Length: 412
Image (cartoon, rainbow, N blue to C red):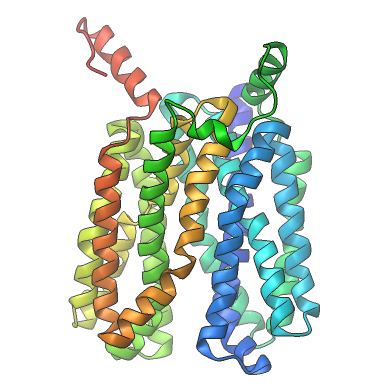
């Protein structure tokens, strides 16, 4: 029963996170039409993306706390209802100010899905398969981007209708969450145990800053912050870079971005497999340093044919978000797993809300190419912070078990 249910979790979680990604991505395709209707300047239009990311940053502590105290399934349902209702509401938005508020509140729902889904998969799949399982689920992120592109090509320039369709379509993942997924057995057992033990009440965010966890929380937050500043800073301006500085037309840019997303999807799958083979931390280090080396190279290459194959290659390494799912989830105990992972991951996303403006400023002062080089260096800084974090417990355990079978003592 449990063996078959883990596959139900895998497919359901993949679909749920795909729609989460789609709801995040549609804004970028709608911005030109939104700007035209409301008469927005580029800075104002960019604030809509910033508001979304800020909402996602706020979501980490809130939804993580909810998942650790009230259950994974309950918190996931809250996230889905929140962003469905608020995405549909954009169809009726009367002005820019209301749009800004709705997008921030929708971000609170959108940001919570990652940590909750990751916790559910980590607590359902066996330790030696978690890397592959979580990475597969989170590989739906670039697929959601492709789905958003297809939806935009079908509906745009009618941006209101696009938000309406995207919001209503998310009823499918809500159905899966409510009627197909079960509450995490590991969370339920731990919750009952906490209630029975004296002195253990509701989970508090303070617990992830307690002695023994504070160092992990701070370092993991720094790693996530560096990774997301580099990612969102670069990805926001990538189409503009290809068009303005490398001379590609709009149609060709779309083709380049499609191949790039497919490269990222392949990277999620391969790095998930690597995480179970060489360890989650080692796979994440390879992802961070690989992105840090290849992104600057992508920024200085001028030959279009080289850019075509180099894009999917660097995107192949830019799979840190999928690896964070299993790695960060294991660095925190079950009691504060969603709170800890959600806080570190989404605080990074929240701070990165200002990354597009930062790299935009660099582009104005120098060029978008220079901005990509800077983004690569930030990836490398994140990799340095990662070195000082511990290995995932399951990686240490696997190493010990393997060494014991070989008749030697493991050095975990």
